[in-house]
Length: 45
Image (tube, rainbow, N blue to C red):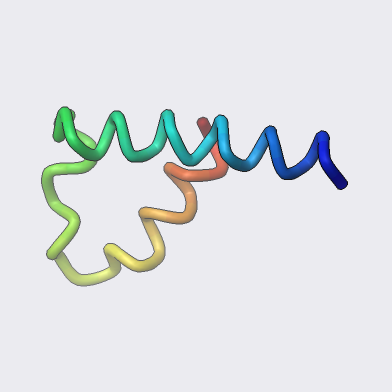
């Protein structure tokens, strides 16, 4: 479980880093269906 926890922390850091940079594919978070796109971006990283 420790390895999985460390991996999730690493992915979360990348996800929030990209969120703070606001690249093109994360600028439309408030659009309809954003709740479906954000997990996809989360898991594809």
